[in-house]
Length: 254
Image (cartoon, rainbow, N blue to C red; front, side, top):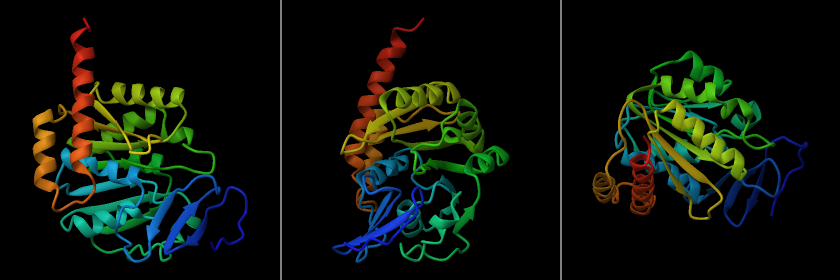
């Protein structure tokens, strides 16, 4: 394994057996790419995040907080030819690694912006159809990216009917607090699913729209399976279960 020297808290890469990975510490992997297939989503949580396609199969504009190794940006750029993608990344060191991760140059459909994602989201209401949240630093999920005011700004940043998809990698108490805040910002229209390894919870929230029905989720997964090899059928089943749980809870509320 090839591992360069790095300063504590700074991003670094490892190269091993035809893969390149991004780290803040060796114990955790922020992003992973197969050199022979740079657009493939290797980490299971990234495939789970693509479940937003079950809500919005052809979004006009995706905004993402957190670039990492650019796995989701590359996939969307390759597989959604009519979608614009804007990635917001606060770390210039991470952006400087884009060529190592085969992230294509900026063009009319792809733009990487070095900025504070929370500030950009606050200042750009109604700017996107899908908002992806996957911003972490060496300490984990920054407080600025999981506050109630931030999620309120996220809801405002979406077009009516838009979808937020968030990767929640945090301790149980913080994870539950984040889901509660999302429910507050999105009037309860929040569904969750676990990635295959169980360490990441993926939350999806709709703005000014009810989540799709279980039947719609399964039908969209069937329609998209040939276009998107990202386990959408499994995600649809998990989201259908989450929908049933949310409906059961709502039935007991006054």
